[in-house]
Image (cartoon, helix red, strand yellow):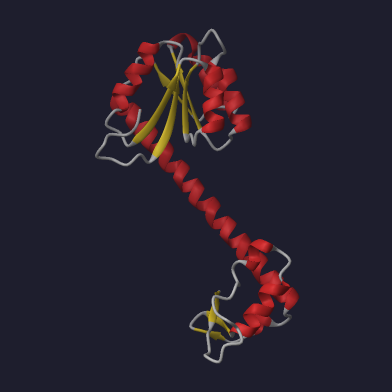
Length: 211
């Protein structure tokens, strides 16, 4: 089941409960939300879906005969730690859900029967936090890559970081750019410096390494 036709799905949710009517109720509660919904009554199939689909958030019932929700959550955390994990619980199993939160296995819990506005609000908040963490991680990766590039350039061309900046960027002529690309050990880094024009051409062509 996908997001409504007039909305683009922003996240993928996996719903797991051994009772089909509970899954259908969750679908109805979320039918107007911009989510791509996956649902199954089998925890084992849920693990397969986690491996094959880009799941952002998992909602699992805590009491299931095939495999407990706690075990499913633990296995999901081990294999896919970036997936937000939510337990669906009744009053009788609330203590177990709270213990799972304290142990770091679960991010949130949802009691049956749930309040639809509360459910939607909780999911929106959890997914917004997930997006925030992903943006921070992407920024960290970009910074690490930038430092790798500069370190490699400094190794191959000592003193390059002391060059004069032009509008916040290092100006490199094509000949030097080609030499830098050829000298880099990392093939990924080389792609950042592959010249787009013949470096021996008479017409000047300047590339920039943004600082």
